[in-house]
Length: 421
Image 1 (cartoon, rainbow, N blue to C red):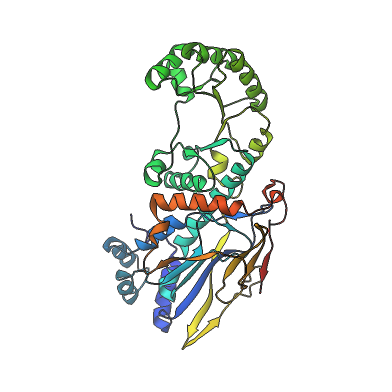
Image 2: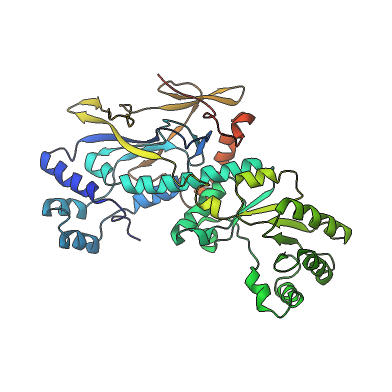
């Protein structure tokens, strides 16, 4: 897959103008940060880093890409010649995937020539904004699930490649499995899924459908019990499997009341080990509202893959310094409402008794947040399936540093302040 044209035209026209002005090779520092968290959110979760590092490694302009740019007169011949040989040779530092971020957190720092760095702007922001939005929503859902299993099942509610990325981000932030097989194959995420209402409707009776599913998949399956009458369907599920069916799924109605009734019915019939799975347009608020219900697993789709109301993390990519001769010059925007802070920044998480108390920008104190991710080539530990496992483990560690009130769903200030020094 070619990533080169997954970009905005102005990035290439800036390269052309910089080549003409003689500034294209000037060493620069770009930073990725958000000016504020989405309204009411207390923290965000960095995700997509491993995908991004692979994309930058493979970023190059093919012969077809160059031909298209030439045919459309996007840039001149000098720029085309530059793009033919394009390869990112700079350095990238950043927060480890799975880390928490706050207002102003320098989650990614790109040091390279202007031309090398500016070309990557759209690719960097599209991956990090999407994946971090999903991970941030997933973390909120996981924090209120009280240890119960969460399954990502939103592939049909987003673009096909975004679905794979969303499953990956959700897994990093605490989900246990996905329904998406490509995500399972590509990223090593456990997969789950059995049947939909269409399977029951296909058969001449619900009993026939259940028997067919059990015959094919065994009793270690999940039977969907709300196609017609839930009470009758649960009776059938227990009867057909002699009380051994692994789980029943409920996808409609008053989920809290129905779960209570189904649990009592299962226990009364002797199916005490049968689990209850709830789906049906869940989000973090409905999951929290079901805290006292006898639910064993939640399946979440639309809300998760759309960031639960915040489909982007709000990251921007800004030039903060460039080299003039042998001197680094800090630069910053002064635009009203869109100011930035100049200069390359270092970041630490201030901890007291093991809990995060501040995001320190510029002061070396606490846990260092930035790692070298790419230095001419990506650091292998952050890539592929192993990188996903590493990010998942790191996220749990980072989230454990938050005080309990930081996990509340009610709108409030960021869990910790960002302090510049």
